[in-house]
Image (cartoon, rainbow over all chains, first blue to last red; front, side, top):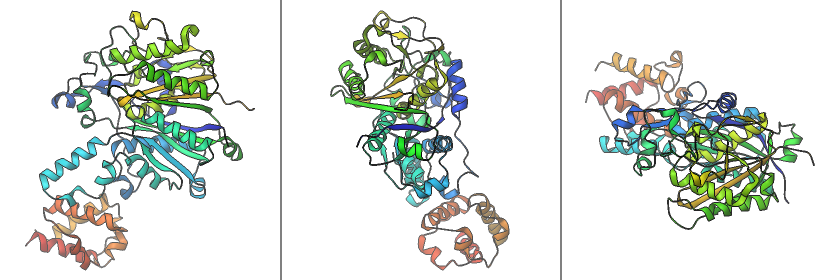
Length: 409
Length: 81
């Protein structure tokens, strides 16, 4: 049984907005959410640049028992999931009377782990970590907590796949619904944003050091790009079997038509053109879509010299001279890491809903090797029928998602 | 530390952290029922007592606690040992 899978709700909490409305405005304006965090400098970071995001205060919204178990990224995911469920018109009655699943991408909970280790060293007594420490410290903190809060009775697990975690979570949810194993799945990605989370990443020397101009520092594809900027938040999509969505008169935002994936099988951190091409190609072939039908590509491009060049080569090798518009929303958000594969699908669907392409800000001039792809530096009005989102991660894990405007057949 | 002071600090924390209405905290009220405690909450009570009174309780210490009065007296005994 091959079923159609639609998006019926979206929620977002990121450095460019705390909900869909705010993020839509930022995408249209080309607004950056990047700033400077002095604490990182004190901790010995090479770069103190980061997405600036406020940790939500959930007192009054959730009980103490629920709150103490939430790591930072789970708080973001709670807020984005609440918004997504509201937009999907899924209420408490529906949650209690239907088998709904949850799959999130998350690959660290470093702050919770480090704070607990510090406390053990200080107190020499594990009881004094409190009851929430274990539930905050595991990579599955998002799914274990949200499954409890929203009384989930279907599939329930976390996907850890570096910077493709969010993309793979949505792709896996898509396959489970398409095959008939689940009707509705809450899926997405979450990423902690704190100095504990990114020290080892900063140590690789891959972060931008343009600290005097934070909002201009993330410059994917630009000739003067010097590295990525870490960021994060929470991004949630409600994926649903089309018939189930129609039956309950759910708002149908768009249709997810394909998921491609691959592994490079090479270097642990260096990207690979062939691996990326295999993932893109798989997504196109599974949906029986030709490259010329893709109206927009949301690039993974993080603003690193090697990564952007590799992706541009992979895109050009498949899309050739179709001149397909490409932008990297990481120019505004920074690299939302474990969440990015999910958040960038939301950013792309927002563009589809509002007939525009968000700009790749800070793109002034392409290196010669990148000049072959059509990078959109300023916001443009354009009707988007079919879009693709790229996500590539450490270990050579790649994911590609294709979304189309929903049309009755 | 005097019992009055222990009661004051304890009630403030229970209202703030355990989100119980102050009017429900009575000397003879059922401690577990009033605070709606599960097994995980007792771990957090150990943390709360350590942070506020710098004394360590064990899980078995709670076995004799029936009322708030019992709880205050337990802390008082530990603090003044």
